[in-house]
Image 1: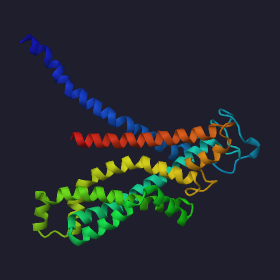
Image 2: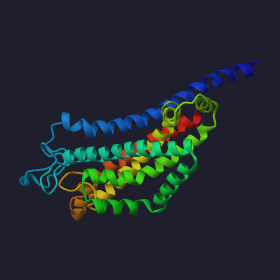
Image 3: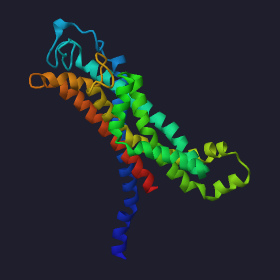
Image 4: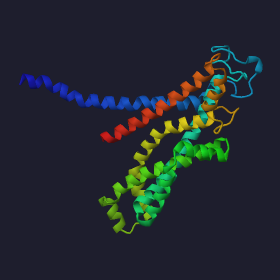
Length: 287
């Protein structure tokens, strides 16, 4: 009896400890993502920083912690902190827009394909299979090159690459729902297909698509940075983490700060979204 009484408190504390760990596992990446979003979108509004372009050449190449320039300036006299925050805003706008397009268009195509089935399913999936068969980065580079460098064209090029992935995830989730009793009941009641997709399919596959979207955020940020680095994304002088690294590599040995700061911002952002996506995936699998 004594042994049982000794073990009982540990057994009682185990579920509470697991719950606390799960909450912490989710809270840390949420806080990190919130920090990145707040820094890029609210930072330029509340911090006393100059515009990211049109700097004073007389203040070029200032070191970090110079008066009025916390991270220094680049060779054109532009404030590095300002360019990082505004560049992060551009990268995040691209990332969020790409995932929204992939989530809406790809999610709709996949749900429609999985629910209706038949010839429509075959046609949609074969077209998507052709797109997936191409190397993703090569296809994105080709689309970006043909459209030209700009914020809008970068979004379109990356969205073109993301739609097939969202569609496949959506179709797989919809196929798992199609034979469940509540779906059969909706069909027997004569509910229109569009209403079934909106009221029954979308709420059930939404969490999976959102989790997949969070996992894909980091990938989109990296690809957008690569496009801007190559001059196919957001064009200079408008700031982007990718084109900041490209501009700084010319003087990497003399002024490594020009590459280190945007690379660090890129690393933290990708890490934050990857941790959040993994935490959401783990939470969903535990439930």
